[in-house]
Length: 460
Image: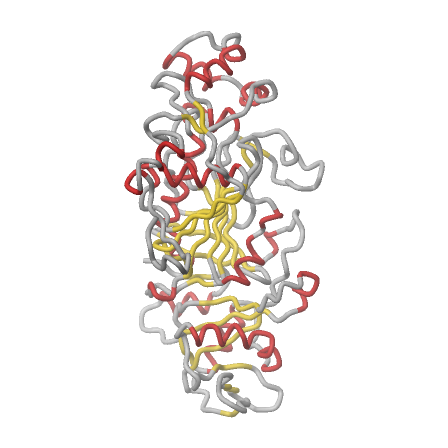
C-alpha cells in the first residue's frame, strides 16, 4: 500500500485516516509546467498542480490551501493548456471534462472545460465533483547550493517506507535516497547490501563518492555536499505521483542516468544533468545515481576475496531498487531506459552484457561509450600491488580485512598513482568483452526493444 501526504495538512490527513469523516481523498497529483526550452523565462511561467480525483468546490479549495496554494486562476490556463491537451491525448480526460479553477468574473464555484470550443468559466453547483487545478508557487531550482529545506515537502510511502521529498517549480524531487547500505567498514570491497529503514529524508542531495577532481570539493561551486565513502544514493525527479490505487497505464517511462567521469569522478547530483528541465519537458521519471569510483568501485584481484566490479554491482542494486519502488513515484518499472555518457556509456555496455542485470531494463542508450572497457584481475593486480603491499602485505581474506581497516583517504590516494580503472572480467558480473560476448548472439546479452522504424518492436 502507498499514499501521498504533505506534512502540516492536518485537515487533509484527518480526512484520510479518521473513520467516518467525509472529505477529500488521497488522489493522484501531477505537476504541470509547459517547458518551452527558454531557460531564462522558466521562473516566470505558470506552474500548476492537477488533482485528477474529483472533489467539490469547497474540498478542492481546501486541498489547495492545505498545500499552501490556491485554486489556479483561470488566466494561468493559457500557460498549461498544451499540457492538459497532452493528458487528454493520453486518455486522462475528454473534451467535456471540466475543472475547478479560480475566476475573477464569477462568484462561488468556477468550472471550465478547456478542451471545448469557446469555453469560459461558469457558475456550477459547488457540490458537483470535478478534478481541479491549484497554483504551484514553489520556486525554480536554479543554483547548485539551493536550500531545499525551504521548499514545500511532499511525502511518498513505498513498501512501508516514507520518503520525504520536495516540490519545486518544475518537478517533485526526492534526493539522496539510499539504495544500499553504506559500503564502509566490513562492507568495503563487498557487493552492495540492502538497507532497512522506515523513513528517508530525501529533501537534499547527499555526498558524492570519494574522488579527486572538480567534484572533490566545492572550490568551483559544483559540489557543496562533499564526498564520502558513504555515497550509495539516488535521486528521483517526477511530475506525477499516483494515488494509492496505481493504474499501470498512467505510469510514466523511466530514464535511469549513469554519469561519466572515466570511472574516477562524477556524481548523480551534477547540476549539468539536473532532472527538472528533462522531466518537465519529456513527461518521464528520471533517476540519477552515485556509484563507487576508482579503487573503491573497481579493485578486483585474482582471488575470491576481492573479485571486483563493485561499481557495476552498485548500478544493478540501484536498478533493483527502481524495480521495487519506482511505481510509487509515478514511473513504470517495465519501461526503464538506461542511459549514460562517456564512462556512463561504458556502464550501459556492461549492463547490456551482464547476466546480473537481466530483466531490470527494457531499452538502452550508450552515449560515447564505444564497446566499453574491460580488464582482467591479473592486470589489476599487477597495476595496484606495488601500492598495496607496503600497506597490507597479506593475501586473500587477510588482505581484505587489512584493506577494510585502512583510512579511506589512504586508499583514495592510490588513485593518484595507479592507472585507469575498468570493469573486471570476473565470470560473475562480466563474462567476457562486449565484442566477444555479442558475437555469441542475442542469447548472450540482455535484449532491448529496438525503436528503429525499420524494425518496429524488434528485440535485439
